[in-house]
Length: 175
Image (cartoon, rainbow, N blue to C red; front, side, top):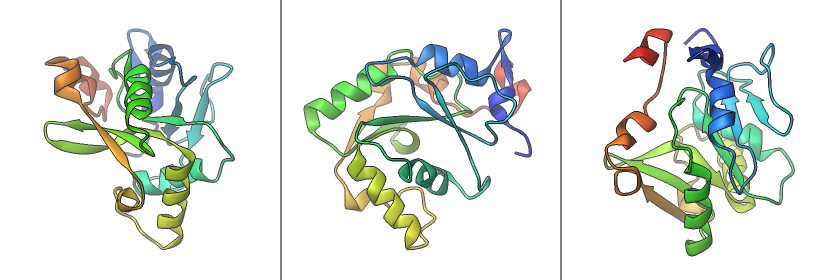
């Protein structure tokens, strides 16, 4: 989009700050993918991942997280969804625990969304391998791991449509 959507303002705070405040969960603070982590106020304990290859899509961005050493689940959210549900982390953690899946994704309006996602270390390895093989489709790693889909409409009802919308400009925040 040519700018960092994490810096857009919602009710006097940046989208990044709003997401971090909304999504504290049993998994810890989420990792947030954004165009640039520079010049952003990032609270202690939060991780804003600088997208070193903007425009290449979510798979390449996720691969940046895959190179970070982690033995814990990683909740990753995009910086352009400021209205994600407060309980997203808890819902994802419960879904993962009940299914033993390698990853948890949202299915919204019948479509599996690439983000947000809860990734176990096995899914991070599958993402890294997909990128190593020059894959670019966001779902290139899906066949290599067990995925549990969370049905957004079943859990969050009518709010799901707004919760998982992408915001691409300041004017989108007022609609």
